[in-house]
Image (cartoon, rainbow, N blue to C red):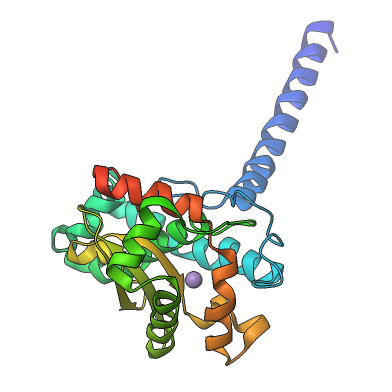
Amino acid sequence: MSPISRRHLMLAATTAAAVAAAPRLALAQTAAQAPAGPFKVDPLTYPTNALEPHIDAKTMEIHHDRHHQAYVTNLNTFAKDHPQIAEKPITDVLANLGGVPDAIRTGVRNNMGGHANHTMFWQIMGPNGGKPDGEVLSAIDRDLGGMEKFQTDFNAAGGRVFGSGWVFVTVTKDGKLAIETRPNQDNPIMDGKRALLGNDVWEHAYYLTYQNRRPDYLKAWWNTVNWKAVAERYAAAKAGTLGV
Ligand code: MN
């Protein structure tokens, strides 16, 4: 064999090895990051055990990495055939579900609602969440009868949600608060309102620790609220810049 054809063969072998390796790498990346956008789940800004003993680490892990991820995976599947659902802010799409094609409207309602709800949920929780103060506390006193009545009423409303859903505090642009519930993964944006905060009362949010004792979960959940994040959301709502 001439030196030239020998080098050619070696080069070909190297290239073949590189080609063979490439799909494996791509598959591994796909599995780790699945699915590719346009929608994605942001990582938690605190460890999964940060909310213990009120919310256990396994629940946080499954809830964030599997339940929230499933809504986002479904959205990305819809976006393959209907890329327009990713071209506007989520708030705009949810505020105008009538503009979403019939074939995917219910799916977008459920899965984009779920994406919005959970994005808010992770944001308004955290360790060492403090207590409400300033404008938020004033609004709670003014509109919800003070902290004690507010928490009692919020827990009662969450307890009355039949099946799966959410209990929210909604906020208007002039800062007025109200306790409201929604079924399934509906979000107040769908009827022109905004969530200041909300608690997930789907069983997947609490079942490992609390089983059927939703009222115990609702009571304990207050220990996980990050009031600094809530204050930031309140300011953004009044400024008209609140996202999901
Ligand atoms: Mn959930």
